[in-house]
Each structure stands twice: as structure tokens, then as C-alpha cells.
Image 1 (cartoon, rainbow, N blue to C red):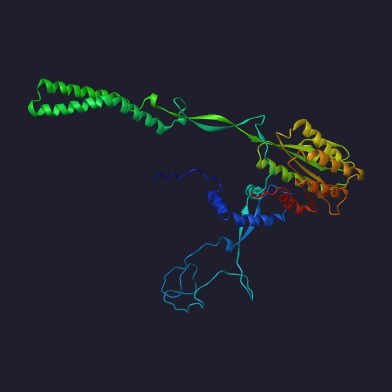
Image 2: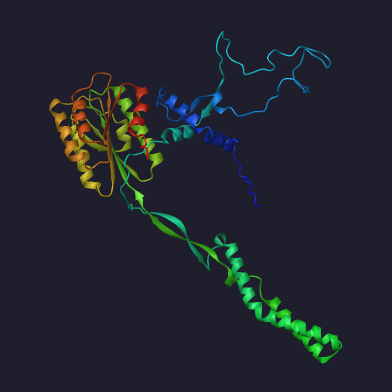
Length: 420
């Protein structure tokens, strides 16, 4: 039986393998603890992990224990009270148990603390999230290729040598080439055995047969064990892979009504969305749009750090989004998504315009559209108009954020993976 020994070094983290086994084994408990931790966690610092606690009962395993009675010998380090031969009463109850906090009722258990790294925490957090209805596929402009097996070839590099296939070819060639010589050798040896029963070693016929047998053995030995003709190499070809194309439009309100705290929460939401998309999808484009009275497509740096502000006309951002879709992103080839963050404050006459643009222009083009309203006050006209959009379009989602603690739960609600 073949045995494989992994001698790769783990580097400084000597317990990396055991750590991954632990995470896989108790994944459900760890994920529940991560979910509980997310409700109170801020995303000000995305570079750190999370310390979680798992109840001891969730990771307990069956153990063998000694029953009452019998005689046992053992060494207990740290004994300063007894010496060999001392006698003392057996503790009542026949054994001990887990310690717990002093209490006059009930019992408890210590929790197991486990520190998740940033990568482990984000993997668990994003595991059951997805872009909804990601269905349209085609070959992207930069086609991805996958190396696939395509039989064998008689030429190649040593690294691709197929030893088993080469040995089979060698055995077949030697059998076919040696077959006539071996058959004649067998006949000659049988004939020599018969002659030796009636003739001497010096008989001309015996000498001739011995010379023929020697020639046949030399011919058989001259056939090489393996020849370049036998070598076979694994053949791999590049196969184009269809890639799922998606574009996410990020629309952020930067008007004067969006104070620094609201802008900070909007940036945190889009930072989380950006991290989710770049970690989980290879072929996703991001379009950043900032707006006040005028909407403008910007790059990532300007989207998150520009200090420009002004009045509020939300329809300018929606119209710009629709124009970009028509110009650059065909609805037959691209999965189109939108995410909008605003405080809901908008010019009164503009909110119905936003509703009409969404229902008549944008929603027929997109797979999913998420609107997040960031305010501690009551909803305003934009929210009420968007309720009409939600009733008319099942792929439109709305959520309300009142503080930093709502960002994680809202994000999970918006991008929760649908049940199969």
C-alpha cells in the first residue's frame, strides 16, 4: 500500500494543518459564533480577525473514565500533603467533574476561546453570500484557458513523462520483437536435449545447435529494455473556459445632507461590498458613481476619499448609470447589479423621477438592485417612492442603516445566498 508523507514546512505556524482540521470539524459552531460576533462588530478595521467563544459542550468528545472501586496506581505531580502509605477517605460521589462558577443553583461550563485570523473570518463571513441570479455567461475579452488532459503524445518534456504508459509500450514492443527468437530458441533447446540423449558433446549437430542457441540469446539480449519509440508523455491542451461577467454599479450620495458620520457608514458599506466582490469573483467590474446635484463616474480613489459636496438630485446618478449600461454593458452578455447608499434626502420633485427611471429603465436591465438608506430619522420621500419600485420589481431590495452596528447584518440580508 502506497503511503504519502507530506514533508512541506509549515513555516512559523507549526499547527496550521491541525488548525484547519479544527475549523472544518467544528465549522457549524465557529460559524454560529462568527454570526453572533458580527452583530456587535465594527468594520473600521478590516485588517484584523475575531476572537470567538465556543461552548465547551459543543466541542466535547467521548472519553473513557474509571468507575468507582478497584485499585489504581498513579503519580500526581505537585503533591506536598501525602506520602506513600498514607490512607485517606474516598471523596464523596466517586469522582470529580468540571469546575464552574460558584453558585447556589444550576451548573455551568467554561467556554473555549478561539482566535480567527482576518482571512479565516472573512472566508466564513462571505461563505454563504453571493450575487443573486448570476446566470449570463460568455467568453470574456481576455479569454481564460484551462489546461485539460488530451491523451498522450510521443514527444514532450521529461516532467510530463507518463511512466506507466511508457512501460506498457516497452513491454509490448519487447514481446513482439522477441517472440520469433524466443520461439526458435525454445525449439533449439528442446532439439538439443533430444540429441544429447544419443550423441556426444562433440557431435557436429550438437555444436551447431549450441552456436545457434548462443546467437538467439544474443539477439534477444540486444533488444533494448526501453527505446525512445516507447516513451509517451501526458498531453495537455488549453481549453477556453466561459467566464461569468458581472458589473456592479456603486452609487453614493455625497450631498450636504450626508454628514461625515453618514458618509463614513456609506463608505464602510461599499468597502465591504468591494472586498466581497474582489475576493469571491474573478470577472467582476466595478463602476463608481458619486452624486450631489450632478453625478460623475469616478475611480476607486476618488469615490472613497473625495471631499466634494453639494445639493441633492438623485436622478442624476440613476440616469448616468443607465447611460453607462447602454454604452458599455450589453444586457445579453453582462450580469448587471446596482447598490445605492443615501440618507433619503432628495429634492421633492426628483423622487418620482427616480422611481420612473428605476421601473422603466434600470430594473429591466439589472439582475439585482440594493438600496441602503442611512439615517436615524424617519424615512423621507425617496424611501416611499422606492417602496413602489419594490412592489413592482422583485429584484429590488431595500434596507435601513441607523448606525455602524447595522452594516454587517444589512449586508448579509442583501446578499444572502438563495436556497437551492
